Amino acid sequence: MAQLSRESLHASVADPVLETISFLNEVMSRHPQAVSFAPGAPHPSFVRTLDGHRYVQRYLDHLADTEGLGRERAQLLLGEYGPSRGLINGLVAAALGQDLGTEVPPQALVVTVGAQEAMFLVLRALFRSPSDLLAVTDPSFPGITGAARLLDIGVVPVPERGDGLDLDRLEAACEQARRQDRRIRLCYVAPDFANPSGSRMDLAARHRLLELAERADFLLLEDNVYGFTAAPGAELPALKSLDHGGRVVHVGSFAKICFPGARAGFVLADQEVRAADGTTRLLADEIAALKSMVTVNTSPWSQALVGGMLLEHGGSLRTLGAEKSRLYRRNLALLTDALDRHVGASPPPGVHWNRPDGGFFVRMTLPVPADAALLEVSAAKYGVLWTPMAGFHLDDTGDRVLRLSCSYLDPEQIETGVRRLAAFLRNELGS
Ligand SMILES: Cc1ncc(COP(=O)(O)O)c(C=O)c1O
Image (cartoon, rainbow, N blue to C red; front, side, top):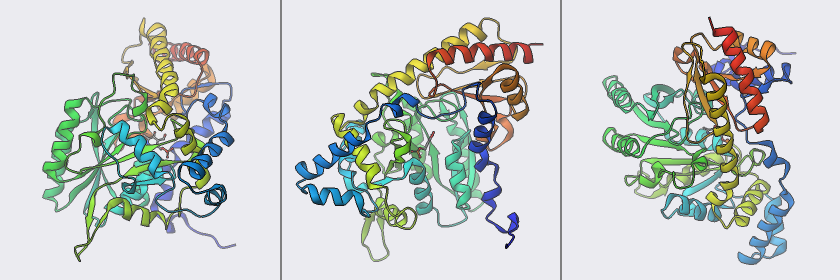
């Protein structure tokens, strides 16, 4: 049997960022009785009640009747290879257009294997030279830093403040790159309830970021996975809605508003790409061409499921996500309320946390490193799990921070889990 040395493989295989998820799964499997605030996965009730057959039928009816394809052709479409850019682009474009408040041309969309593939393809398309850099919020979703690692793209961390990206630091990073004959090509940002920090950019910060992107000439990769959890009436416009200069590539996911097993997401890339001979295409065309060499096309069955769900909810992403949004806001309120009652009454010195208005996550700071050893104590002695934030950071500033996710739990589990967490904090950090 041939033996390979790990050093002979691409350096990303040994990058700790790739182990973030398997590490947590391993800890959870060793402590099955623990209440786990670790998984950022959608609530299982939405998967348990899923009637996939009905949704696929709904989409088939739409294809056969409304689109006039006829039964046989519609049925074939789901079983065959499909177009790389997607099957349900018209439905998604109409739905996204409602949310963004602007017209979305279906040809500017690519339906992808989750937001993850969308981010990977956007990076592949936009990064040509080693002097092109990706700025990311720090802490950041490991999916973006991991994808950059796979593609050998240099990453520049930009600290996050309570209200999102530190724009002064981003501007300084642009200047520093320029001095080194490099440039920030793209900046990744999740303006609404980022994973893992839960932070949100206010309207003024969104305008300032767009203005900086224009001035310093970089593009923005907007990750809108948690935007749907904003309370009705408290939604803020997506960066893409405010984007008059074509700076924003917008990525979305059906994992949280439909279900994660669909592995469906999308990218809106309406930027014009001009070739040397003067012809133009959309960035989405280039991304679709790249996709044909990665996953070929997103499973038509998955697209049919998502398409059927959209149709059953009046073709609106907001309506589709409304029930789930309510559950996540309830869970988040239960989590922060339980923290106030059980920890807040007499918090150990140096323990504090944020109170996001949406999303799945609360960030808690400890006076000691929130590392694997402390997590083991928390799990074994107190029966409660959380995620160390160090894995989300590109430097060591997150060593003392942990992430609590409320999405996967029921109310009683949240209450029990926070009571256990309070005991852990009191006993292990109290003195
Ligand atoms: C911020 C963020 N972006 C992207 C994704 C990936 O989404 P998908 O499951 O559609 O690939 C996730 C998944 O948890 C996420 O938290």
